[in-house]
Image (spheres, rainbow, N blue to C red):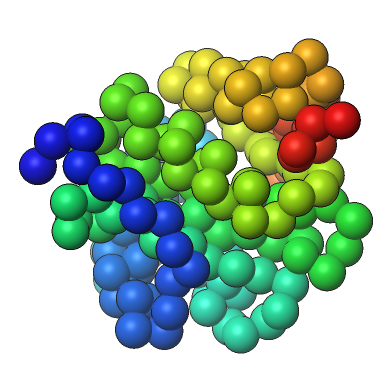
Length: 170
């Protein structure tokens, strides 16, 4: 597989759920470094967002990314029925990070739902900080903002960083 293979970004179907569930474990494992979350006794992590994304709720949309026939990531979008869409979860496997796959994938997901967008990440995750600021600049030019917001019901955690932008930019 080469990074020049065609990246496919498509809505995830119920048949894709087992694949996305396995990618979800990788995603949550990566994030555990920044929030100290440990797996449950069965080896899984919390999965409320995964459940919501596949619930059939019209406010949510799960996406699956593949490259050369290999699953390489996913995104969950929520807020589709409201004024602002939230890129609720976004993951790209380590083997294709820093290759342009993440930027290409997020561009396709966001382009499918034009309007106001928000994305949260943690200051403690330097890769996410660089990536999401780059995404905001690429998609919205100078028309994006950043703010810190407390994590609901988690005063023990550092505030999340939220990037907001409009796509396409005005």
